Image (cartoon, rainbow, N blue to C red; front, side, top):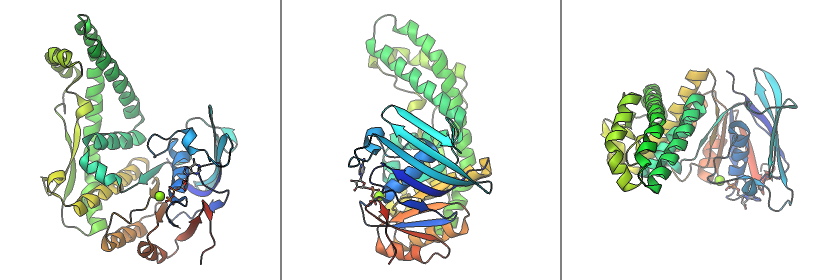
Length: 366
Ligand SMILES: Nc1ncnc2c1ncn2[C@@H]1O[C@H](COP(=O)(O)OP(=O)(O)O)[C@@H](O)[C@H]1O
Ligand SMILES: [Mg+2]
């Protein structure tokens, strides 16, 4: 599989982006600009084209349209370089319409590339919330594994149904639960096996990546904290029978893979308990870059890497380490910063392309 590199982008009515044509290089693209000028919006446009949804939470069409423009449609036009050729790709979105075109032909499923979005503010949520961790891992696994995504969707639907049955109570609950649990158990077994396998693969890259970026001697690993590892569907079904009366009393499913967690271990110790904030941020970044390496291992091609304003997160030494790491890699990067000191480091990168963003458009450098 070849994931394309974004070469051109032009937006109409997308948030505050002006109609400037952005021309990107296949290497490192540095995006500068004061806060509130549209840097993140530019990354969001690339993400929306490549991953078919926004990384911003709870954002829908109504939030993405240019509120000042007064138009009821947003359009993103782009060109991607794929296997040495340029392909055009566009997205048109309205209140009740979403159309995508690849080389002028309607295209529903395929996108010309895939991208990973790095917002190191997430490192805080990742270390403080198990719900966030689970969602982060599940959504990133879903990007790589279509079957996982489909089964996860079915599992969540069955679990909602299970909880609504429990919520209604009544003497039929037990009978209904058995039918639902046939499916819940089957999905749980598959999803757990996939999560386990994913971590085995990811772990081959985490420590080497951590060491490569941050010149660390320490080891880092991600483990699945679950009762259900290596359980088959039958064993999970029996477990739910055993739990049934408790669940009926509580009116909700108390135990299951929907509560499973992911634990970072740092030299064998639980990183959430033992690591400093700085170490936790490095651990999170190492996890994402390990994921990007796994991505290439699986698909023989890198995704586009979107790195949004990490300046508040890393000290200057670690920022420098990160930039040096990016320079050794041959993936396409779009990286933003509003921080002048961090900007200076970016400006030094040879062969990188610089963009200065003001009011959503390109400003001449200088
Ligand atoms: N739907 C919208 N329509 C018009 N402007 C928007 C919309 N959504 C966000 N903005 C504007 O985009 C700007 C924020 O852009 P953002 O990319 O987050 O800035 P930066 O990353 O450079 O700090 C704000 O000025 C905000 O008002
Ligand atoms: Mg921003």
